[in-house]
Image (cartoon, rainbow, N blue to C red):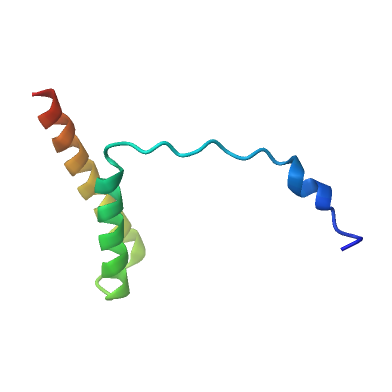
Length: 69
């Protein structure tokens, strides 16, 4: 450990906390479904992630539009 730069660990500023939004649960649900589908072998990761993003975006837009009315 004598040759390691231990001081370098403490020079880094921690990033700001991620602030939760009302739409996080929608995105998390879509992402978890994509992971489950990938584990079952129902598609490749890029396609499943793209589909999850599209689904989450549609649901978020629907929720925003319902809120405005």
